[in-house]
Length: 121
View 1 (cartoon, rainbow, N blue to C red):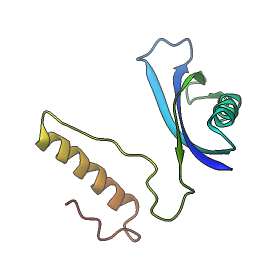
View 2: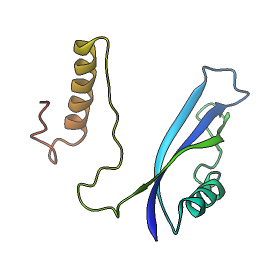
View 3: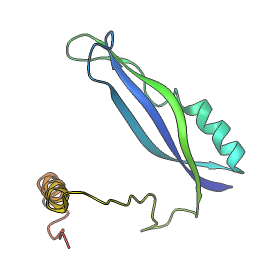
View 4: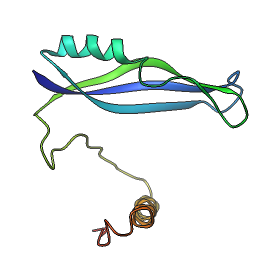
């Protein structure tokens, strides 16, 4: 059996959909014997991950499956294994680094005792 990363794309629709469009991209791990088997398995599972629910306004919230956007075979997961990587070429480097720093600060507030020494660069 082999490990694969599957990128699912969903559109989130609340109520009658009279709101700004929302899309959810998810990276999930799956195990299969081949890429064809992994794709078939991923497509079968796509509608199982999110059940519709009512939000605080009583509106139904649904994740409408759009597609499997990517499928990558990876090595067996181990501690520290890379799962995904994104290359950024920002037009505004300072704004990009400020955004990253805000995320770092959020994590430090969320997990103050487990990540006391997160450093940015």
